Length: 369
Ligand SMILES: Nc1nc2c(ncn2[C@@H]2O[C@H](COP(=O)(O)OP(=O)(O)OP(=O)(O)O)[C@@H](O)[C@H]2O)c(=O)[nH]1
Ligand SMILES: [Mg+2]
Image (cartoon, rainbow, N blue to C red; front, side, top):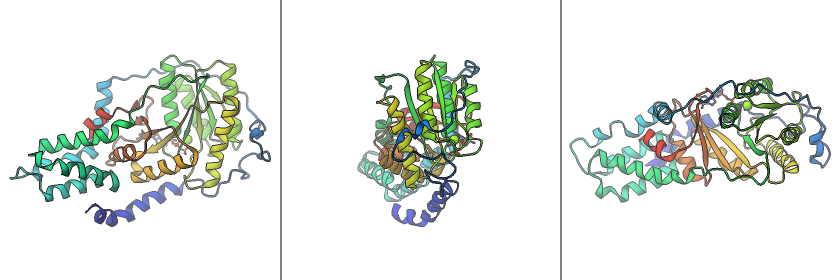
């Protein structure tokens, strides 16, 4: 059933995958003329590109306003399209009958795939629901069963409070394909940390895209974070290196490193990320303490393949899922959590500075079912 549906719709998936790739640095190269020359066989090229005097921004001019219920309200609203697909008319499905029969199961299966749970996760969920079928009588039972089984699939992705790193500052490297929301997420994370009293420094290691540095600097100002940049086209590893050095000198608590969007299939761009990681590790041996992969929920199942490939290539420690506001593809969270053994640290539900919250599996299930 699901396979038949999947085949029918696969052409659509491919289209979204190639859309995600279109804007990527398809032809960019680690040693492309856009970047500075890399030193032969050495990561110490990090020191070669010309630094511009790091700037310090004024202390936090924006407070994070949030209340749990307020955020849940926004989460529910943002995920209303997903919820509609999953649960609307479940009552109608049972029309005149009490038992969960094959026709209802087939309809449910189609809904799970439409909400972007992916074929594998849908199959696993259907198996669990089918096993409980005899005990399900009526729509409320079915909704409760879906809720429970989805929760069991995503609860493992609940993030644990970060361990205190052996060394300060804590360094978080942020990566992902083009346009997923890396820079925005860094701005939001910086604001959260600053509002908790942490001293935050943001490193502009996306030196590739025009205006990327200015965009990040605006976020740094809003969050009240320090900001370290080089010239456009500089070696991103050099920016990372100087940022860590500045953060140590200024006794910072947290360094957030922005990187250029890159397609997960481009070997040379993955090599560039590995170099950034190695360079950071030269200054602080156990850093980066986190390599956060940002995924855009609206890309649906493509987000899952990004997660798999980035993890294989550079080793990520956790995930952030953005753009859950207004998407009908909220099921991708279930799919990613079920398939990847990684914590989902944050979810983004809007473009504003306080539109980022720690992932809470119970809340998430309540918002989609
Ligand atoms: N609706 C919504 N939009 C978001 C969210 N997060 C980011 N965006 C928007 O997505 C767009 C891209 O965000 P960026 O932060 O620039 O993405 P990026 O990954 O840094 O992009 P590149 O640096 O070009 O690879 C911007 O218009 C953001 O406002 C979110 O949670 N919800
Ligand atoms: Mg960016």
